[in-house]
Image 1: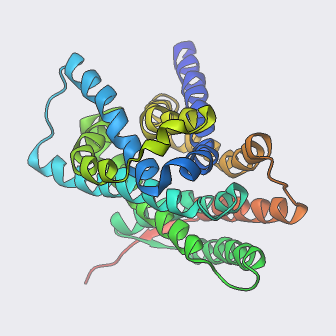
Image 2: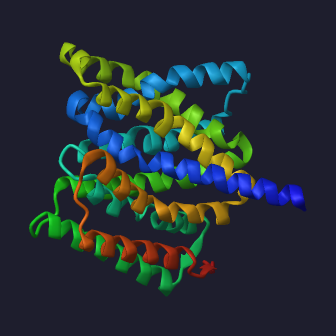
Image 3: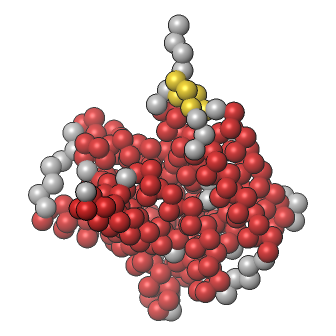
Length: 297
């Protein structure tokens, strides 16, 4: 019993570490993309971390995924390795981090909704109401900052949320048989070879003169955001329980706002905090909403 409690506490700690690491992703992206551009930041991080991942997989002598597992890994690579990094890098060229934090706060709700549909479950009215409230809050916030209209960067972030939610669900299912961190590791190895050419074509000599904070941000995205954060997050859920550890994710938008203030000197308004609270409570309510199985006739 004592060992179980220690294991759960360790799992919660790892989960918190993972969330903190993920919360620094948007600030790091904002600092790096100014000097390296969308393609290098969005795809180059995978090319760099693939070297580390390849060494880990070889040292541990991990078995190659089966053809069936490979199909799921393609979905995960499309979301977590290609779509999400590229879309968020593009969005962070024009949007403040606090703005992005609001929209990414919908990720747990999107993941829960996709998981329900994949499992053949029917979301309840409470789920839909929570989803609508959270989404409307994000849209109102985006319209407020966009002077009455949504920007393309807003649509990119919302698309990133859906794409990453899909890859989370696929990864969660595959992790049961392939292993937690192995899922993102193999997804990285699948995507990296296809990214080498576009990244190489976008490299310039001017990038060599980028300031140190841009280089630190880029390597943080590559090593931590793209890999180590996933290791901590998945390991934490495996040890502390998915339901319990996943609750820590509600801290993420507030941590993003905090880091945006500390590292980017963004001014955080009372309106931003109010919207963040509304979105997080909507996500909590939606995730805890009852579901029912589809009836087949």
